[in-house]
Length: 159
Image (cartoon, rainbow, N blue to C red; front, side):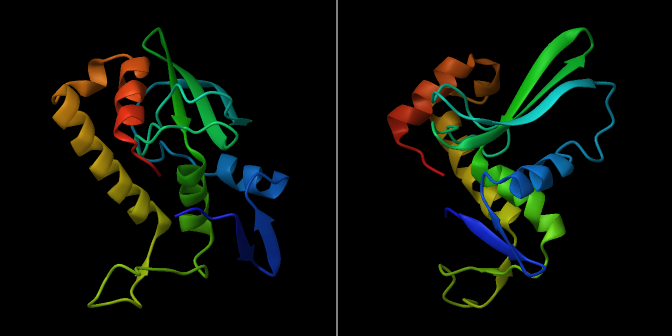
């Protein structure tokens, strides 16, 4: 599901606009985590190459879309997390945009049931994780980003 804009408080927020970027950067993907990492960089960028997977849903961060890149120092190591455009939108708007409604069109029993964007992204992650485990085994996360991206590209996994 691709979303291009939201209505919030009478304002249209377009994906990629400055308002959207502010909302995305205001969401903390690590909220509630107990770690000693120090954020060095946190920005929204335009993705140039399909060489990395989203840290959240494990989809390929597609070129010509936006992604959030957070670089942190943890225990003396540099760690970079990248979040695809769809996960950025879910991250920002699930908490802040309660009056926006998504409905589960696939549900025969409850088609009017409201679902959160982050729930939809979690479903994508579950499917992508199953695919990676099938192809690479349960320790897939120890492999290089290039290997993971290659498997996802070959499988044609999409957001």
